[in-house]
Length: 268
Length: 289
Image (cartoon, rainbow over all chains, first blue to last red; front, top):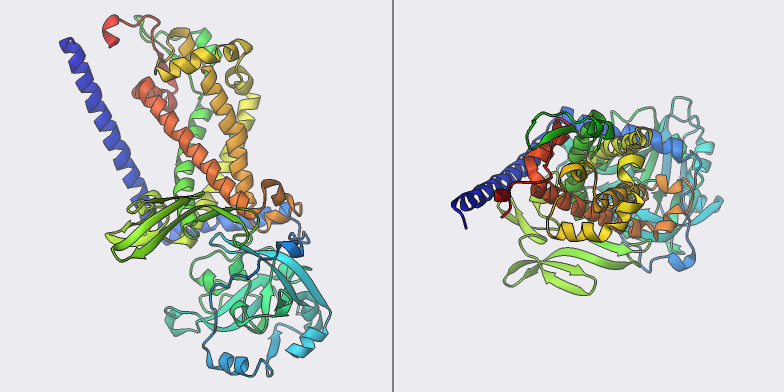
């Protein structure tokens, strides 16, 4: 082996070390830079602006009335997975639950011409829709279940939303864990727009897999808005409110998880 | 990469001696290449963070009735937390990297380790913001690239291998195994393995990853009701999205490796400035170990 060859090998080795070091340093710099940017509000707002584009694109390619896939009875999971609150400890809910939801009343108000209250029996007496659909959690899992309930659109037709109403807000019984925002209510809430509210498959479900909706899945009444992710499917619905803006509600982002940083549009 | 035949036809003799330089990559391709580097880095890191929110992959519609084929989890044992990775029916202990790893000094149960995810800590909402923003740039950049390669004739001229090149595929495979890189005129064209790899990445892996990613959106699923079944259901789509990402990562690793072996400074210069120094046909003997 000639001297110049040995020197060249040494140089190649140095170069390899240099390259490897450079790759590792660049990698670490990129990752720590991304972490710092994740805490920069202006940057995060820029990232979040993509959801408006995604929402607009989704509305173009998947029209307002496009239907979520419905499955056959054979596809239904033996046990529907429960997530989030499994058994609310809030006193008003506990009292209702212990009475078998006998005294339950769904209040529908806000920007409507005719505010109304509905007992469970009244809701069950209305025309029902049954659908076997797939529930997609933002975490990545899915579960197929059979839901029966009353179309939200039918309820809205009865209470007659005012022209300025833009969103349907679901107020729920369950207080979420963790710090409440500046001492504000930490009860779960969610909101959807009127397109989704009037969609054929958007129902207030009182039955899951041919049985009364279990407590762990949101008894006595939960929302199914089938073209959005799981956190939009409000459970333990206490009241429905029509609003022109949700800026004044709790964190102002339109839902409990939205206040925690998730997208308001949960269709992506 | 972009090989400019007209530039090859009129070589610019920067060095009258052994090497000549050619203008190999045109500006649009260089810009799109580096936009891709940024997007793929962020999409991979944020994608792994999203994966960590439910670190199991299945075949089927549903994660209750579907068949799990990859699962990465942490378990508490009397001797401390243990990371376990299950692939099919085989289980591996992967403590320190998969299942259980340290985040800022604290041992945590998590799928992929914090050095591989964006952001580092487990933060699904933030990872989704990164992922869904850069997914747009990635897709728009990719569409721009496909349109550009078609209309600039880059696709037909440089990417699609000729019949003769396809016939020489055996030689090309042997050359790759021996890390032998083309010199002279041959170095100004993609070799046949390179062409085929780029074509598979551009026309198979990238469309698949985008399509499988879209299948994860409950609203996009409604474009044609039931189209997700073509991918085997939503959980299968999530698996395919992950596997396509793994395929792209493998491509990037080989790509970067080849760049280093072929001459990192020359290759980097050509992707930054466009100019590539063509390795001379008859390299001096002392450069051959």
